[in-house]
Length: 338
Length: 265
Image (tube, rainbow over all chains, first blue to last red; front, side):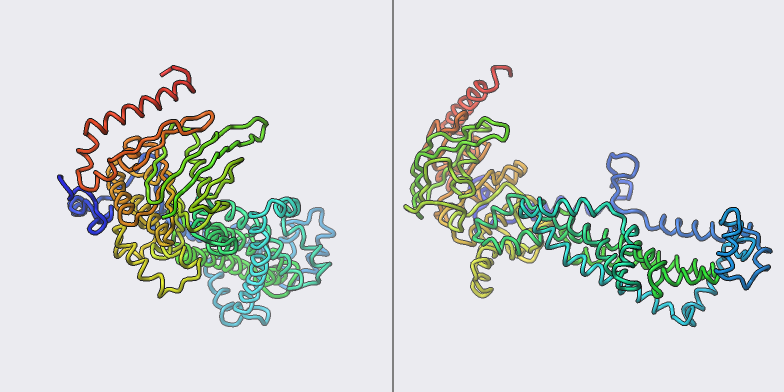
């Protein structure tokens, strides 16, 4: 290494990454085994990905547990009792409840009795009838869409109300002071506690459910957007200013894009909370949606429909999160790669 | 390039719990356009504060800064800034980062595109324009930061430990790059560094600063930056003249540190 060759002159200088190519080539020949990647941590804590095989094993265990429980023991009730009062309705049950010393499983078992957890075969046939004929004159797709459409509206308004307030709070200390009190006051209130209030105030059905979902998501979005803006490093702000950005350009080109990862995480959390809140709200406040379907199935003692409904709710919850993760990897590829 | 004139700058930070820190005390100097000034000194001597005042990020408690006779009162695109790290916009490609300044100033793609390609070439990143920031190594990211700063064609480049986060080998390469950029563009550069060797090699003028209160204690005008263009930098650094000044500055900084910390080492 002598003379000018050593000096990386402007014209010919290569990028740092390009040097040492020969070295990486020799290493690339030897494919590292999985165990080579391990670092010293507690157990596997350092591993980024979970192994998909174990997710499959976990699913099989759950299904197997279900199969064994229903097949071997008729878990958890007495199947004979189910045959005695096949026509019993909710009203009968309520009347019995009033008389019974305790209104619990024993009263239910005496009167109606289908306390046997549905077997997988029963559940499967209930699911197929649900997807072909529907339940109570409503197809399953109508119910799913009714639930989803509520969540979409709730999340939409929760986001477009919450994000600007959060951004404003992140940027301005007066706004922070002003909004901090309501945010901290309302955020800890479980949305479900507000169902009676919202039904009496706004009416039943979507009139109560959508505001409830806005309530469930808006605080999360405010906090996410605020954190996103506050995370912007001083260097980025200063760099933008010294490159000639105006205040407005700083906001739109630097602060908001910089806050996107946090906002997206907020959307993921809020969507999970909304989905859970919604189904519970539908149990009492609406006549469409998956929660309402489960409630009606209860009235008809259709445990199989209830189980199918629960499974559908779980699957949709997982699918929504997968979709958001996929969108995140496309829209915010720099996330976690600082 | 326009001359820089620092006139009687005082910077006093009021502490929230009462009391104050005298970060800079009556600092004055003139710097002709096109020079490369490096600022050295122990921690807390106010070199970064001075740089931030020149950039317009901080307003001095008293005194003023003039660039080409005009008073500085805020950040502006005629004074570009290169930070140690973390100032690039991760949500944009390399080319978009470099064209950020021109775009903010309303230029159309046709206007800035050739310039971006030229700058990519200059900093040794040809073909990397469409890469994302997180795909680059630390050294390459600093090349992008330099190019982004140059894209605005500033009067002056301010650098706050631009190579501080790089490994020794990359750092040496990047020193060569900065030197070449300086010679090619003839921009004025003010650079804060912790490395005495780097300050001596790159600094056409070197200020050694002292703390409590922050002030300029020694001024050197050095030939090494220009010699490095034709001579081997490693041999240059081993030369007696280089080593002599390096020792002088190091012992001076040590003395100051000892005065502050007590003599325990």
